Length: 364
Image (cartoon, rainbow, N blue to C red; front, side, top):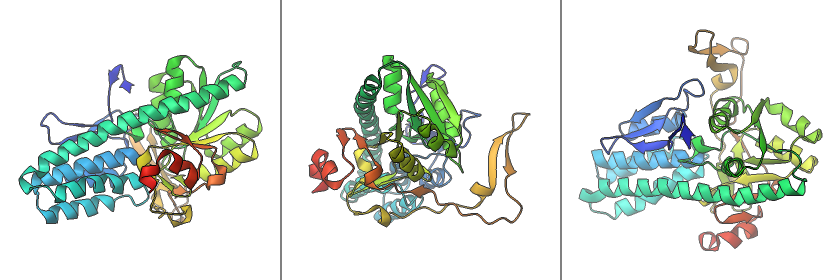
């Protein structure tokens, strides 16, 4: 995607061909800045502290983390330590473990002298594949959304509600949930996006809104609890979100608050779609209840970051001093609430049978 007219991916190799550069998402939307990762520990820290976030992007970052580990020490012990450390940073997103496993096995079978070169090549291939997958998701989703717009009479912009950030910033490029929106907008179909703020880290307010504004897509920022009201008023034509993991039964694990949006959509007859690349499908986990839910720190709930009148980034307290807070990072809408899963191979029913129809070889 473009920022200030210049095309960017969210992750790329530095000029030295070894260090990795990422967009520092903790600085957005008030500053567009890059962060250089010098080794595997830097990659793990970037994932853990959400300098990078979004299931596909943290997988890509982890892949380059493994590559930097092999550059520094290509031994079996260091490979296994680096893989374990990277996987432990974020337990919910399946893309992270998938990306690390994709590099670990070939590297264990490769001569030590060639491991670094192989790891960098595999990481680059993973990134290029992510871009192609997400563009295909955009094509399939755009076809579904355009059909919805036509069914509604083409008399007004298609109004879409989304939650958290599943756009370009959550992937290497294009995004998942936002890819169909970008495709429609670029094709001239009028769209209007309702952007949930997505407490407590405000990825909607800080990231999705910034993305859409940068690309020229019309949007309005809403508080998390406004989505149901807008659906009741007939102002939402469809919902689309991303996901960090889809289990074998079609359950969808996404940012906390997604379940409530799915419930409201079902109650009001609003289609609820989930956009995902195939590596996000966890065939080994049968049910959504079995997904480990990341429990993040209380300070994200009791405090908030923003920009003050002088332009400085500051943290302020929201709650009384000493207030206890609980902060589960994700929830799991069940398959019955999902209209369809938009993947790079097409749209699937949210069920084991539906996903197997598209990905039979992977499900076997």
